[in-house]
Each structure stands twice: as C-alpha cells, then as structure tokens.
Image (cartoon, rainbow, N blue to C red; front, side, top):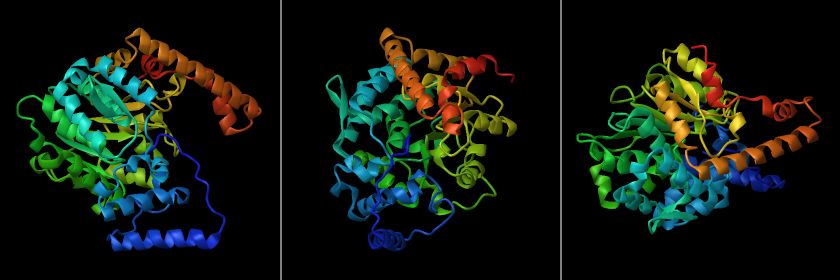
Length: 395
C-alpha cells in the first residue's frame, strides 16, 4: 500500500471507462474472486475507482505469470498504490537500519539474500558492500531492524506473523526467509508462518513473487496463509495455528475504511501478541485513537513511536508507528538509535525545515483555520512528537 494518495487523470469518455471496469470485472470472475466488503470499491486506496488501473495491472501480471513482467514495480499504475523509494530515501533507510541494528546489516548472508529482490521487479537500487538491494527493500529491512530490537531478536516475535497490505511480498520475505538466517536455534525458516491479508489478487501476486525470488528454497518454507478466503467472517480470530506472534502493517491498515478495519481487528489484531503499524490517518483513525482502542482491549502497553525518516516529525503523534508488546525502554532505544549519528540528525533537521515551510505555505493559501486542512497546516508547529506524548502519557 502507498503512504500517500496520487491523483490519476481519468478519461471523460464514458464508454472507455465503462469498458475498463467491464474488463476488470471479467478478470475478477475469470480468476475466481468473489466480491466482499473487504474487496468492494472504496474499501481501501487500492479499490478506489480512480485507482482501478492498479488492480487491472496486478490481475494481468498474475494471469501471465510474474516472470513475464520483470519490471512490474516501475509500472505507473502499479506505483499509484505501491510506491518505490527514491535512491536518496533508500540510502537513508539503509543508514537508519544500520543505526538501529548493526548486526543485521553487517551480515553478508542477510544482505546477499536481499539482493534476490533485485532480480525481479525493476527500479532503483542502493548497494551495500558491492551488493545491489532495491531501494524499497531497505524500508522493509529497516522495519525488521526495528522489530528485532523492539521485541528481542531471541524471542518468537516473527514465528507466526500476519501482515495487512502486503504489496508484492517483500516484507514477508525479509521477516520469514531472511530473518531465519539470523534466528536463534530452533526458529528455522520452515517453522515460520506468515499470513497475507490483502485483496485476493494481491495475495496471489505476492505468492508468485516470493516463489520466483526464493527459487529452490521455496520448498523449504510453509505455504503462505491467505486471509481473504473469508474476509467477512468477524466472529473470531482467523489464525489456523493459534494467536499471531506479530501483526504488521506499513500504512495499509490506516488506509482502509472503518468497516474493513473492523474485520481485520476481529480476525487478526485482537489476537496478535505484538504489533508494529505505521499509520498515516488516511481514512480518519489516528494513531492515538488506535492506541486507545488497543488499550481498551487489554493491550495496555500500546504506544506510539517516531519513525525517521519518511514523515514530518511534529506530525508523528498523529501519524506515528503504533507498537504493542514492547517495553517502554525498547521503544525509546529504537527511536533514539534512528537519530544516533550526525548525518541522520542533519537529514532529519533538513526534513523538518521542509515540513515547516510546506505547512506555512499551506496555512497561507488556505486562509488560516477556516477549513479542516487549513487548521491542520496552521497548527503544525504546536503538535507533539511521539516522544513528547509518551512523556505525558497518563497510562
């Protein structure tokens, strides 16, 4: 899923638009997909009518076979929903991952396996020690660095994972296969379960991608779970092997409408012992509202954490990473590590200045606080960071 919505120019010629949706419907029927509340138009950014080209591309890829689309990550319609990182941001993700978990990035075996992702999908890379790793994969590696240090590399946090908004499966591979290379004894790759929670065709795309990049090692891993086989069942948790050890979502959960959020809450979140959810409050639920709901359900350690880079720092209390199942000192440690070098501090300061200038312009053009967007822009400087909120957390 994307961390922002990109406007797509639509043709005003009605027959062409009708034809496009007819083709999309036929593809869905031909692939055996059923319409549910989790896949209906408007249920997420990916299902909005203006982004129908994304689903069309995904369905054509899985119908042809992903190997026939070696540069699918660079297709414009695909990038409207699943964005790529620029080389600059990919480099910054590499540096923050190194600062948070040096042992992870120092492992040649881990990084060499990460280069498998450069063989399929296309797009820019950021090399390390001569090994080419796609820019966006560094985001997923950074997430895994956070996870290891929030929950403990020796724990079972990554043995039974569910992810909402799976993209093309890269986060899954980092956690399930690459993570096994650094796991303690007894947590080998074939014992790691991973449930994909997305549109049915996106789940299929991710499975094709994972099998393509893993090659012969795909037979050493368990079959991937697919939650959307019955996404309307809201009565009980859906895990087939007990409670989930971890719930992950990189923006996608906060981009769902409230009905679908409730489905995933009932099926996955409330039965996940730990969580790491990057929020952008796209569809109304803020980070703090999500934290309150988690605490009310018994996850009393739920809190927010700033994530650098990627967002304006003073907004992060509203669009932060929501974490549960981690101690407060580990949350503090990961957050501080991401700003632990002069270079990282300098880049974050530069980003903050750009954010301030952007919101000043937005405030001026919106004529002050007369509109919700104007109020948000004009109040930017008064917002707290996640760390400031934690310091005053009444919990």
